[in-house]
Length: 572
Ligand code: NOJ
Image (cartoon, rainbow, N blue to C red; front, side, top):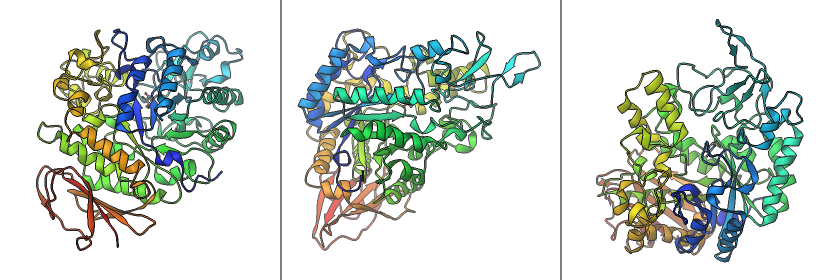
């Protein structure tokens, strides 16, 4: 079936809920499903019409739900299946669809399949995972792993199991063994589970790490691995493997195509040319993918430390990446638009300015740049009122295994970073920046919980919170509301479907582009990324241009004030 032309999922605006930190309803300090249900009216007021729900399945939470031990149940801490059904019904009653987050590259080591698999070499589930012999022994006679792959969370990607004298593969933590998609039984079990959820009435899936399911034949060493560095990135050789398209096609035929659902695949190390294969209008695989290229502009690839190498970003580089995605997909494939998610630092602290003076205006500017692009936009919880990064004083305040492993490795074990340097990396790039509880109001714990939150609330909650934003008609919340309503309403053709034309690629201070709609009208989007005035002139239309939205109350013409963003509609 062709995906060209108008589709509801192209016109949607998605909001990501990371349940553990969204809203606690029972005072145990952990966000839960009834908490989400209680906030559906708020999301409806914002105007979004799809929720991406990060994993709520049974899980021992080694990686906060991305380690699933039972695909058919709800995590105890989050509630029950009845709670989930109520959430789904409430969301649907408000015109909001729900995407589940399907983690199918790996399971938890506590999943029954893996418990069976590790029991013996002849267990029927043995081949559900990747088990391999040692590649030899070291000087002390200790077994050596099958190859040199490192894990995304540091250390190697293999764990030795004495019971059967073999190693199992884990691209993420050792409690997240990789499923063997080569085994047709694995694929059928995943498709069946997918259909079960779709039959229940959910509206689609975000597919976790889905472009690494096809490992290269013979599992060769990865030439890019440097054993002296904390890898913090997935072995390059496993991306977009030879069978991944065949299996996505199969999954589409076996599940997605049978429902009116939406699919988005998470894909690291994927350029636009690869996205055409996954999300092309005629490929029958996925509706769209999340790429990571713009999330890499503030890391130094040469340092071999993945995201943990800080580099000041250059706006020209950010523009180059985003512009390439806009132009290369146009008319051929669909894209997704995001600044934030549960794995990324907060965008206002990253590409904007989170000082008291500029937080709101720079967050509005960033929202403008993203939401006027082609693709389906995603908003991450708290982004809509400008939540910022956090700087907790001690490593013991942090919870994410990715940050804790990095700190252990570099500060505690190798001593190659001082504690202060280790904390600086976490302040800039740690995933807990996105995972502190949503700041609902200025009451204790930001109104997130009546108990003690599982991770502290950002101390700035007394000023930055949803209630304060709702009380201020000029707030970021209402700015997002307006962007969403323009996209879902009067400017749908322009914001969703119009083609994109970049302007002034070499301008390192201003991001400007046009959208050309099929009715001959165009939008001109202008955004000053600096904290000072700049002078720029653009071709307008002799007074026939109409200012559609701006983050300042007036228009200063060619003078762009700090973080000013404005959009004109121009008719010929
Ligand atoms: C990507 C998810 O977004 C991230 O949170 C998780 O740690 C890994 N995949 C492993 O599932």
